[in-house]
Length: 76
Image (cartoon, rainbow, N blue to C red; front, side, top):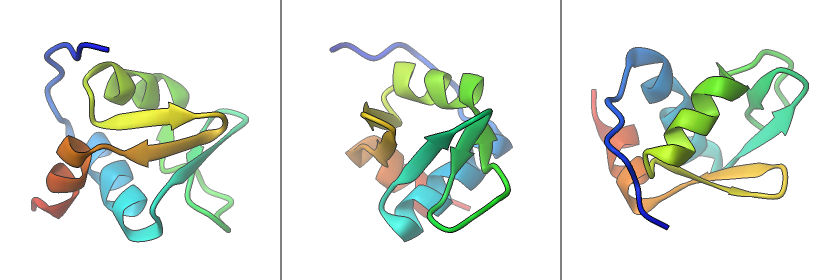
């Protein structure tokens, strides 16, 4: 799978940091949630953009950071 150029925005960084802390995010209703949360970390559309850009990988209902996403989660 090839990745396209996707520029990181602040909403993506928040989700990537949480994915880095918890190891994965869970897809529910309208967005991605970290385990045990009832507030979305980001909307599904943003998560799909992060998958398209190679920052996250989707496995079932879980989204896990790629190596690229892992490094981006360290930033800031």
